[in-house]
Image (cartoon, rainbow, N blue to C red; front, side, top):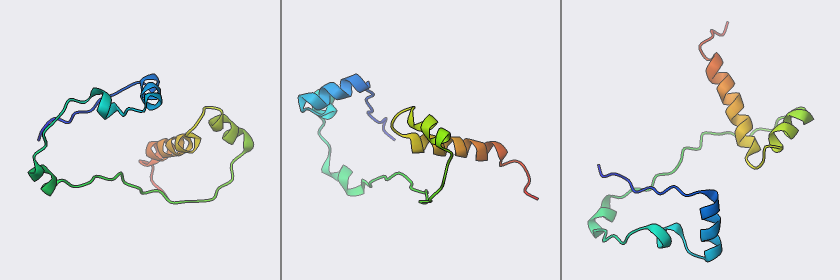
Length: 94
């Protein structure tokens, strides 16, 4: 398997690229000649979506706490709940 070419850039660099109208690929990546045979066996990879939509009610101070941390508060709330489940999954349910 070939090593993947992944470039990590800072948020500031991403904003500069966005404002310049150029993509990171146009800016940083070297030119590659990709053999058309490569595309015959290439398969798209999609992230797993194993989440369910659910309506819940939380205390206002809980929601405010996560929202005050910025964008992605629901993802952070999910991460906290998942960590709790992982930490307690070894306990027997009787």
